[in-house]
Image (cartoon, rainbow, N blue to C red; front, side):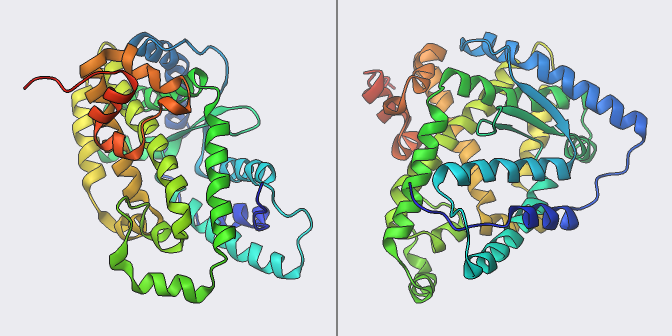
Length: 344
């Protein structure tokens, strides 16, 4: 494993807490109702996902409804676990402590931005894998889009619990993703780039890789890291796109306003707003592309081979689509399922 830089994670939590925007105003009764409905939806969702996909039912796990700061602290806690598994320096020197505080400040700032937007997250890397639903953000979006609260809360839970079902069906997946991250770190270590090398790449922004990782990663990542980053992006695109498709397939019998939710939510995704520039910088625009590229792939495979065919992606790393296959599902259908193109 490669040694990662030491990070002052306690400072990251503090910075995120100080910068986190205030939650939308609510009464105690509103908060109590939202928490209860999100918990109910989280408990119901795995069964609906299993029924819709044919993947095994997941009956264990931890479901938490949290506020923004708790979500940020939870993400930092998971980062600490990952840092330890990937080889963080145990006893940092003075220079490492200075650098670690700078990195922690940046991390806290990013978490403060994300913490006001993310609706939920399944964390497979925590000591106990867990689902986090961020109640203030769910309330804010359902107000903004004028949605039926119970329907929207169920819809969000379906997406996040699809991730729980995915990781249960592919227990090898967390280690596979960690191995890819280690490849990225190793590539960065081997590159040994100077600040001048990075600045030179900034000046060559026209030479961006064929598959963008987001502006910041495109600039800061050494060229040797692009291959493992492409694999990470392909996996995340598959998981997010699959969850986006399944949440709509599993919801119609329960969520009467589902078409309205999908239409208004997609419109919200397309709106730039005040976060657009930052989103492009840190790769949030890339995450939206992941949802859409992954969803197109999943729908194409479902159309050709149904859930039985699509579920092959959870059998092992060799069955995962490459990034090229994600963008051209016919390539994956031919390689994994032996299916040729359908006649037009």
